[in-house]
Each structure stands twice: as C-alpha cells, then as structure tokens.
Image (cartoon, rainbow, N blue to C red; front, side, top):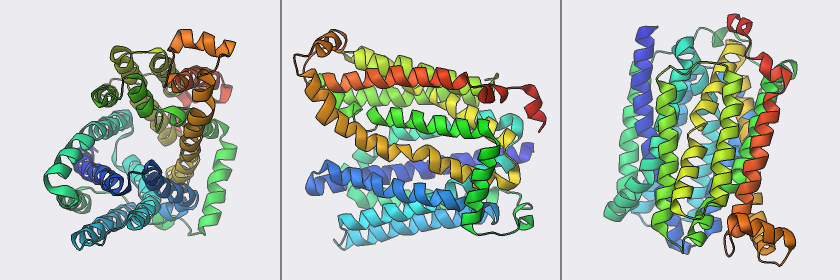
Length: 432
C-alpha cells in the first residue's frame, strides 16, 4: 500500500498540472469571448452549459462507473476533453472559432466530467490507504486552490504574450503528461467491477437513491451540503466581484488582492489537512467548519468597508473548505460499500451541485432587483442596515452577504444537531 500511495502522489502532481492547464484554457476562453462581445451573460452561459449536463448525467453515470474500468473511464474522459481543446485550437488557427463552438465544447466536457468525477473518487478509495484519505483530501484542496490562484495570473500573462494559441498548446502538453502517468504509473485494482451484474443506468440511479433512503445520515449530509452550496453561490459566484468593485471605486487591484487571499486561505487549509495530523469527528469537522466559514467569512465580508476586512473575510471563508471536503470524503469511504460507490458518488455530485446554477441566477436577480433598490430607499429597516454595512452602491450586495452568513451558520449548526449525523462519528462505524 505504501508503494501505491507513492504512485498516487505522482498521479496527483500530474493531475494538478493538467488542472492548471485546463483552468488557464477556461480563463483564456472567457477573455476571448468577452473581448468579442463584452457580454457578461455570454460568459455566464459558458458556465451554464458546463454545469447542466454534469448535473443531469451524474444522476445516471454511477452504474456505468461501477460496472466498468475506472482507469479506462478516466483515460477516455480526459482524451475527449483534449480532443475538444484540439478542435478549439484548430478553429482558432483558421479564424473559424465562434462562441457557440465554446458552448458546445463546455457541454461535452461537462458531460464527460459526470463520469470522470465519480470514477476518480472510486479509484482514490481503491489506491489510497484509509488512514491517508484525510491527507489526500487536503492535498486535493491544496492543489485546486493553488490552481485557482495561479491560473488567472498565468493565463492573463500568456494570453497577452501569445494569445489563445499559446495557452492551448500548454494545456495539451500538460494533458499528455497526465495521460501517460495515469496510463503507466497509476495501478488501479479493477477486480470488483467485473463481478457486478450490469444494469441499466436508470436502475443504477434507483439503487443509489435506495441506498441513500436506507442510510438517512449520508442522505442528510448530501442535502445539507446542497443547501450550503446554494447559500454560498448566492454571493461568492457572481456578487463578490461587483460588490468589491462598487465599494472600492472600481479598484481592480483591491479585487485581485481579495481573490488572491481567498485562494491562499484554501491553500493553507489544504496544507494543514494534507499533513494527516487533523483528527477528530468527521461530521463535526464538516459542520463546524461550514459554520465558521459563513460566520467569519460572509458576515465580515458584508460588514467590511475596506481591503483589510475584505481580505480577512476572504481568508476566513476559504480556509475551512478543505476541512469540509475531508470530512465528507472520510465518511463516504467509511460508510459506502465499495461496489456501489460509483452510483452513490455520482448521485451525490448531481444532488450537491444541482443548487449551484439556481444560486447563481437567483443571486444576480436578488442583487439587481431586490437588495440594491431596497437599500436606496428611506425604509427604517434599510436605515438600520446602513449603520452596519454603509450606504451607496454595493450596500445591498453587502446585506446579501450578511444574510447568507447568518443563515448559513445557523443552518450548519442545526444540521449537526441531527442525531443521524452525530451517529456517524461513533467509533463502531470505523469497523464497517
């Protein structure tokens, strides 16, 4: 198992490099699209076409993952994503690239990620020793946050230097390295899937729901995480940037610093979790971390009026995230039988991410048509709120952060009071 863990570390490094390449391409495509028509809605639709197929297909992808080679699924998924990059590269070279081509590519990538995600999760459970799961979850959080910090800076610089062409070449090179490591270095035991009787994807979806129905605690965690995702996406996905800009005099440097500190918070949290020294109750770690993220992050973000408060809030919001992810992974690998992990993980992805598009759309609507106009009125409640968040443009979005912070923290605390969730931390479950 020690040797397999070392192989996994090599795989993790290669995947992080590939993730950096893909993230730079995604950012470069946003720059390319925005320079074409300057439409924020066009950029939002890029995310929409990526999220929707992922959510829908995840409902049915679990059976396929459980009954087929995890390694082959990952190799094929990554290859199709690389082919999409080649297509974009070719169209760009002949000046034939259009926005609808990017929508289609994002749709295909979202479709394939619905299979690649659970396959990767199941593979991790097969390769990584159980006592290293928390550590690996921290490693993944560290790399993803490092990519989030580095990719916009690198992509913007490379885009100015060599355009979309240069970034796509780097992305394809990183894919080749990751593909070869997965193909040659990582050994994934595939002795379980051949024993599973192949069933329709609809039957597998029903089996996944049946498992969750009979394991109320796991189902409750998934639903509560979906609702917490909803609260966070109301603000951070599309409200944070306009709020900071409007309250800082359109100072892009301030926004850049706040976003960078947010990434650093996730990196620091990921490093701590990846040391393997984080012990204790997994369920408690999930909900206390979520409560602190909302209470210190969102509330401070809304009440803050300068870069010092916003930077502290962004760090406080992102630092607990790796602990939340680690707690979830430990519980899932501990409680879900290996032979149905693909079905459960895929269903979990569909349910937990299903609230994100709704949160994004509703957040923008509430900001533009409810909270911002309300804070400009002479209403007595608005006057009271102005003593907390200040006046002027952006105050309504600041109030939204206050609301999500308080509601998210309360919901996290109430969720942990559920007896079924608390029972997950009992020692006897480790023996299952």
